[in-house]
Length: 276
Image (cartoon, rainbow, N blue to C red):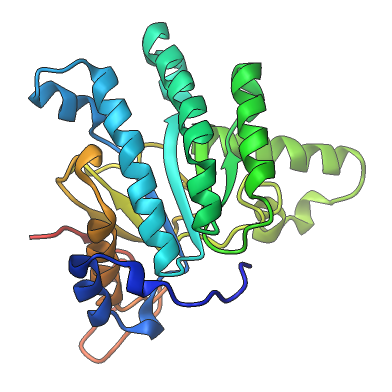
């Protein structure tokens, strides 16, 4: 758990600060996860190649990360590159994305340190190219002593694959006699997930208006509030993160129980929040 940090809200833009003043400190999320979608469409609308959308999307990452660090958000997890992207996208595009990742890490580690941001990764990292893994390990080592926001990049990640890997780990424990199947608990599964040392997300943001989860953190988002925006990821900024957090703060999280007077039983605990 990151240590309590000194306030940096004075570094917010005027527009960001106006929203931040409206937030209830008692109703802020600890962990925000984002499905960053729309890079290709952003480029297509401008008659540009998809590569330009991915490049602009990388810029958006740093803007959002810096705002997250200024409001002392403890955890920010970004769906950067899915297992399906790796398997189904053209090799040229995948190669570009790997180079863009390496370039992003090289260019932004200094800014991460300036903002007290620690970076880590989840996914089948071992399947990425060796030179990319080396750059990732370097960035993680360079930022590991930072105590502010933990930025987690989901790379070569798929939630179903994560569960398969967790089941394999549990099967080995059972084979070794360390665990009996009838004693298996949710906590046993949790400790084999990639996110074993992280809290579950409080808020999931999806850009580009698509109403799907895309195989992202399926176990972890059981009671996560969902915020969908039509804004494409390359146009997403820190102010839009704060807008999503403000919408989150207006929700009554019931975790399957009954909420305030007037709530009806049987209503889903998590609703999709769509900005008007």
